[in-house]
Image (cartoon, rainbow, N blue to C red; front, side, top):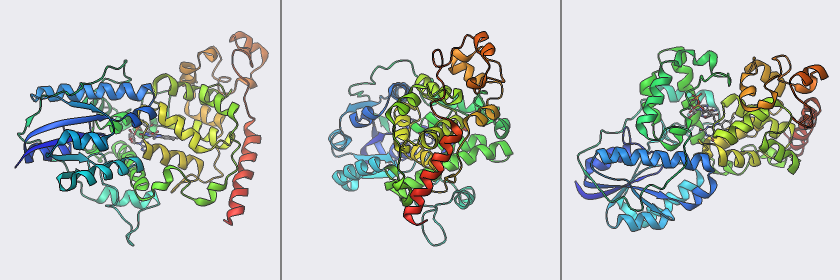
Length: 451
Ligand SMILES: Cc1cc2nc3c(=O)[nH]c(=O)nc-3n(C[C@H](O)[C@H](O)[C@H](O)COP(=O)(O)OP(=O)(O)OC[C@H]3O[C@@H](n4cnc5c(N)ncnc54)[C@H](O)[C@@H]3O)c2cc1C
């Protein structure tokens, strides 16, 4: 037993299945639960994520109050704040794997020396633990996933009897209405609700018009649930459960990739694609950001991003492909915009997926796969329900026309109250031409690199 410990909460805003919390409350007589509001991270987050964070902090504080304690909130650079608040106490935390988090944690650890106790509470298998036969990080998902499913997992210990500090510091800041109810208990309710429908996941998961995916991404981002809690509840016995848990494996894969290849946060994993001559047209980028490209499924996705900060995975792929391939705008512009506005915005997942769509990353989509936004829309939002929800000016268009309003006749448009180029934009690019332009541009970059 040591006298006192600090648990520095970061992306693990829960008490259940939390290795840092479980170990600290077993090892120490008293524990101070600390959250540091880092102005640098706050500046990179839009309102959706900030409001969700504040709601989760309030939830954690409530849970700690039922243990007789309070969450201690402080503000400033963690490299100064954590050593100052902890004094001579031991400090426990669960690791994070982005380049910024690793630099920050390295600097804090250097100040604290052997008082630091680090764990992994945010992934199923920590980065660096699953390696290829030759000891290298995996760059291909399928063999990674085979290992991932077959390795035993390690659960956190149950919390121990330590007394919890009652000092709230500056207290949890106020926030506006979050997208989802805050805290671990609300997250567990969401998990229960999803567990009841996971059997349908393989057939419905690609449909943005149905509320068929778990929407647990923000809980995983903030750690109101651990991926192990989710796996324990869902299991892997049925096809639905296995298809779903495979997505958690993708999440671990991208955490392992950014840990092993931190440069991919800024640059292409495949260097030949750093030479792509992006158009980077400001007007096109503004139209994409505002959901005014003239392609209804793209506009619906971008408006959902602005409106609630969560977007269905299929639609994320469609809007990202449109930006990178149809508009030839650098994937990093899109990644930055997404990261700011997504409630689940997470460097490892966002970069991994943007590079997948751009064809520049590990095990990425081939560069010549260019999503056709109209075909995708017809296939995955067949009745146009999703588009109607987010692009209300098109709501009166029939199913046959809503995916490509410019192909409608004047009578259909008039009957639906639409004047193209006025109440709704004309397409800002012709997809067939844009596709050709994209392929030529990628081929030039590959030619220059000799690939
Ligand atoms: C361009 C682009 C950017 C993205 N940016 C992010 C991001 O910043 N943060 C983020 O959490 N996810 C990101 N994703 C992945 C995915 O879109 C979301 O995780 C998913 O839509 C969240 O909804 P859900 O929880 O209902 O997913 P479900 O389908 O219920 O999946 C369960 C969980 O598995 C994980 N998962 C699902 N799909 C993926 C995937 N493609 N890659 C990695 N993990 C996945 C998530 O943690 C998700 O919560 C991005 C995808 C694309 C195409």
